[in-house]
Image 1 (spheres, rainbow, N blue to C red):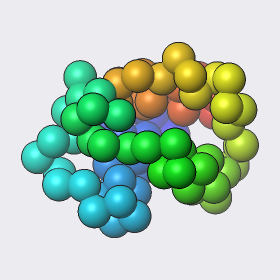
Image 2: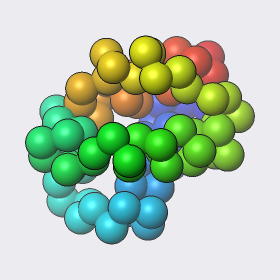
Image 3: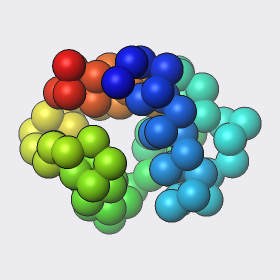
Image 4: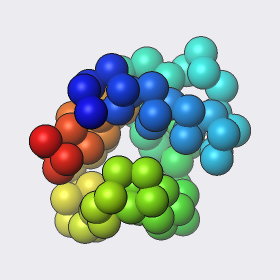
Length: 80
């Protein structure tokens, strides 16, 4: 899976599962501030990542994920 496919899949998940407007899904968007993803949402995100990408992220790894670009890069690194 290439980076564009990851971006498309992640963005679709955020729109469908969290009802986030596609217009705010920019690489520099902050997950917590701009996208308003809270700690409970991160639990759901872990489940979605496991289902869609085949790995279960660890909480300590996600602490370094601040922006949407960080999130894309993290997934690419894990499945690469």
